[in-house]
Length: 191
Image (tube, rainbow, N blue to C red; front, side):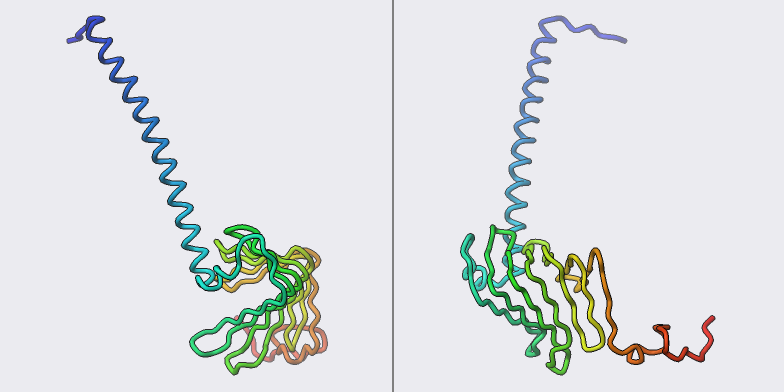
């Protein structure tokens, strides 16, 4: 059975529908504002977890710091030391670094890897270091250079991009599996 509504009945229903649509819009705006506040709170929490509060307080936005050296420890063992000629905290999210050198230490506390770049930016929120200039990674066995480098601090993965060159000082140290010229091949057969 189909019921026909009179105009007097449709008018209040229409006003209720319009009011509900306005309420939905207001709630959507409130939700959007709440999401923005939550995102800002999350970003602030991530920044504070990436840098200790005492270090964050020492890097106010817009100020340049010269001769910065920041060590990193795992338990009581020195993990790395980052040095830069200058550091500027651009905003809540980014640090700009000039003449950055990162020394990475092995488990014996000896320097094992040197990472250097003339200009870099560190994203405090996602924990990514990105060079703005050619970068260099040095170990006793090799030297790698590339036009740009990114380093994810969470996963400890570095990526060199553009004109990447690898110079190996002694192929014999890399072992037979490397398959370089002049290196005796591995005698075991692989399936």
